[in-house]
Length: 243
Image 1: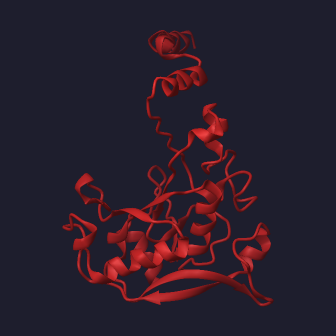
Image 2: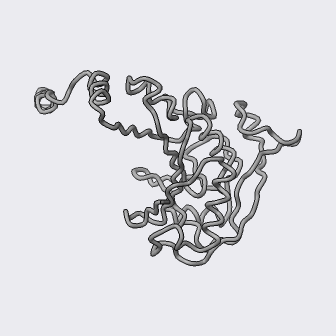
Image 3: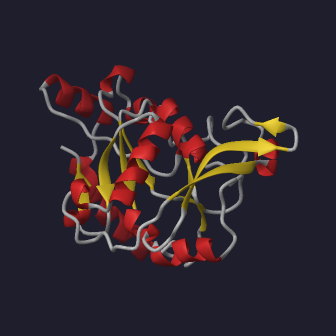
C-alpha cells in the first residue's frame, strides 16, 4: 500500500504546477482575446436534465452544460458545432424509434465499426433520427453541423430518415419526455436514393455523388441548421469542409 501511495504522490508532484483556478484561467484567457474551444462528451439524449430519462448519464451533455461545467458566462459561447453520425446509434437501454434490428442494422454496425472500444459490445444502430437531431440542435443552440460516417452508408439503397414518430393514438409532436410513450413510438420513415460509390477518395463535398449531396441537403432541411462538415473516413483528409 505504501508503494502505491508513494507512486501517486509522485504523480501529484508532477501535476502540481498545472493545477490552478480554472475559472480564473479561462477568464484571463478571454480578457486577453484568446479563443476558447470546449468539447462535450456523450449524446444530447443522455443529458441528465433534458435526455430520455431515466436512460441518461449523470451530467449535462448538451451545450447548456458548458458554462456551468467550465465556470464561464453563458454568453461566452459564440459558435456551437453539433457532431452527428449519418445514422443513429445508442448504447444500452432506452427509446430508439428508428432502430434497425435486421441485416441493415448489422451492415451499418459492421461498416461503421459500431462496437464498444473496450468491451466490444455491439451498439444499437438505426436510420438517422431527424426528430432527435432537431431537438438536440434547438436545445444546444447549434449553429453548424458536422455529419460523420457518410461512408458507412455506401451500398445501402434506399436510405431511410426518421422524420416523425407515431403511436396507436396518433402522431407525436416530436421528442417527448415520457420515455414509456417513446418506447411505444414507431418511426415515420422517408426514403432517399442511396449510392454505391466509395466516398473515401473525395476531397470536397462537391466531389461526392449526387445522391450523397442530396442526402446531406435533406438532413440540413430537416434539422434546420447548415451542415458545414462532412466526414467520409477516419483520416484528416477525409473530413470535408464547406467553403
